[in-house]
Image (cartoon, rainbow, N blue to C red; front, side, top):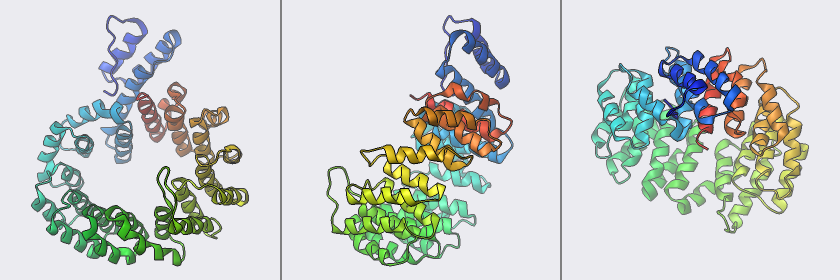
Length: 427
């Protein structure tokens, strides 16, 4: 049940928390933790046990949105969520919650979970079947190819992603190429293109054909897959995209071309791509400006490009784009003041950019950011309360500050808060 606390020889307030956890009484565990904290002080591991119980109960609920949100938080919690995922994986019945927990454990090389998940491959529920595909062994190519023709798109998508493990198989390559071309669902075509990135140089000409896919997300994935397959071969293919009107795919191409590793010099193509990205910061479409700003986070501009990024931040009026620009500047600029000042200015608002700016500041131990997150716990918007709660617990490393959020009337807030507490216990 999350990060377990073992009270060897301990009684009193701690025993009250442990007793409530033993009988799965969440309300009693929260009340007992309040009493423990009043006399003994904060205990991250003990509070994480309570958060783990909250997430387990939500993951086993009958409400799909709550179930999925809780399971997502357990996966994000890393090692701290493993025990709870194992408990859910051992739960009774053939349920989506159990299958998702087993799939998460299988991805972490849990052989017992893989065996349980494998047994679910014969079920009729397409959602459970799509999760069970994770349990297929690399040598079960025939079954993967069979599922690639399934009537349900989520199963086809899962099978396409699993086929990435068959990178030496010409049959898998051809099947993925076909699905990438003709599947009616964009998410399936996108998965097939992503899988093709594992096939090396042989996939490059096939991926090149998919740059004209009607879906922008698929085209963006193709750019990434091309670079994964063969970066040197991909560069002359994706460079011409910078001659087209800006789009998510061309922004991704520019990011890839402009990226350099530590202590590497950016070549002429990379400099051109960097300048192109900076030019998109003046585009009339705010979503494209934001996409370019996000791309620049990994590019780490210096010198004149850094000046251009500061200038773009100074003139930008859209709050979401300003957030992206500040985030791009913060790790790149030796002078953190422009980015920090922009983030501080964003705090003067009651929207998501304000909470995200507060989250970034809080991660850097900024008192103003922490104060904004604490104040947001009283917001009327549950979405903002949830983001603030997770950021306070996980980013600002203040899990006890989100105790009120663990009792929030909105389950989404409680789940986000518990996820943040559990993740914080890893540190």
